[in-house]
Image (cartoon, rainbow, N blue to C red):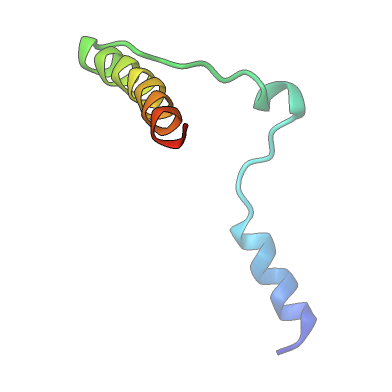
Length: 58
């Protein structure tokens, strides 16, 4: 396979290009009550996991 063919394939597969400013504009969207509950439960689960691991280790 020549490099010319692979160059054309990679050009076709490229997605949109975002500037650094646009890429940093993320936000957590928790519009529904269910999503908020799942998000908070995940955070609480991480804290509980850390506490259990610390208790088990020492």
